[in-house]
Length: 239
Image (cartoon, helix red, strand yellow):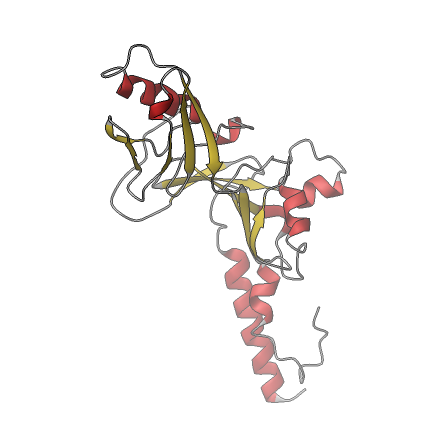
């Protein structure tokens, strides 16, 4: 063995020792939770005892560019189709502007009814969403095809990874991260141990996705140091 090979092996061992001795970031259990800001604008998230992961099927909340049709049963002259503006407001015929972003359809119905109570007597209102953002999830990190995917029907984390091309060779199967928006400025994350679920053939802990969820698969520690290993010349196999 040449001096160059000996030096290379020593460097490799030092790198591996540094990585394996460093404490892993975040909790280590599959159902641990963590929080991360969705945007660094100085705002903080209001504390809540209820996790967004507890709500499997949340109601859709209106957002910019959504289009809805408002029908008045007894006063059809007020029937109208409105679009949620980038600032979250809609313009109502004869009732001014109303902020509706973040509200569900029942909440918006009540808000519009309240707005028209000023000019109509107990208006009967029906709302139908005509155009809205289709449910989706995103997958990134060590998956075969990172990207944005339509969320069609009930989909779990493990199923979403398969849709995104499965794990690639550098994936850390035991620490898949699922991020879910708590508010405009904050997202809550949970670690999912997909490796454990698959090895035990038990998917009872497999979380169900909600629209807008993001899955991130980190790289394993071995894959992080693999880039420092010369492909040839050391006489040792590269996994």
